[in-house]
Length: 477
Image 1 (spheres, rainbow, N blue to C red):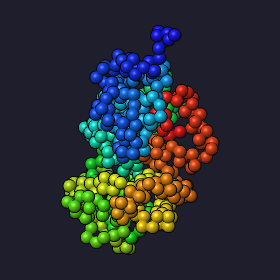
Image 2: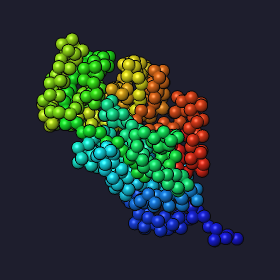
Image 3: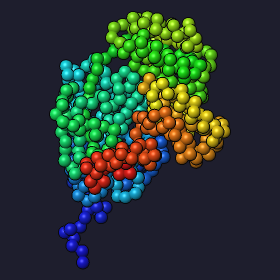
Image 4: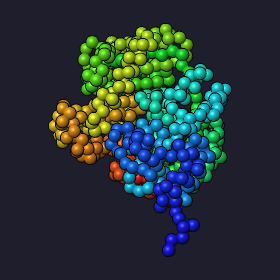
């Protein structure tokens, strides 16, 4: 005989959904068809799994109530921002009862303090919205990446996003002064302090930054703002090899100092893919070169002064042949066109085996050389599409084949391709996940490349903060 008074809502879909609806409203508990489809498939369309429902709380208090209900009933929670992640970290695994908790309704800017150079934002704010708000008070929020029109700041912080400005400003961890987090039992940690100096114990916020929602749910953050540059100089350069790019990076660092904000390495294969996908885009340089660099300087003052500095800094490398050719943008439109080429690279070669890896900057040429040779030996004709943030050692190393059919066949050998690339990275002291996170995609792989004690410590932290394992299970660890 069943005691209905002790019925566990997690065992009853309608009852559980009704309990959620009492917290967030019936219209914010999605359960069917097209209503939930976009929440259940990742951006790469690699992972599609069902969930009991999608719940969309509109406040931190509501998030806390939802989490407390799920904790009580041992129902797993998948926190989700803009669902633009590339490692399957923001969608269900399908291995148990899961609720997708979308933070899209937490989209308010709570405070903007230009004197303290801080902004307090909720997790569901679109990154471009945060950038625009900073721009409105002559400040800069420096995280910038291709998905900034749709990704949400909570997801950026939960994956420790990087982007094109890490060289000058650092990654997401470096942009955060305080956090508000809903813990795995539904309690709220209110750590929204806009302080640059606070040595009162452990820096708890760092546990949640980059944790991909596996320890708690970031609901708001105090972000650091920077003085907004008023001058920009953007250039596209052709080079013979990655060694030349690394050497030029070092020289520019000396000649331009902190003005050097972006230094993006792009292979000829990537440029050709973009021009094939978007023939309306002009090729920046008349001659074809094996490698290119998109470089940007930013500063206070006037464009003319910065442009003059850029020209004097670029000239020695051109005279010595380190840089074979260079086009310096003469207008905002020209600079935007160069950045469109860079931002279109992922779209232009969407179907291939993708990697987001990092090594010391000095080891990038060795990585490209050794990984390329090993892949060619294992998969004759393998075509690397290498591009990314050379200035901070982060390369997106994607592998295709000469034809679409061959590429599809290669993708069926993804595990072997990954092993070759990851082993090359590990031998050079690198990381198999630089800025895209671990998610589902690399969860098993990291156990091969991290020491046993690192894995043990990570599991101990997970157990301490999420003893019942309900926070984004099947991700990271």
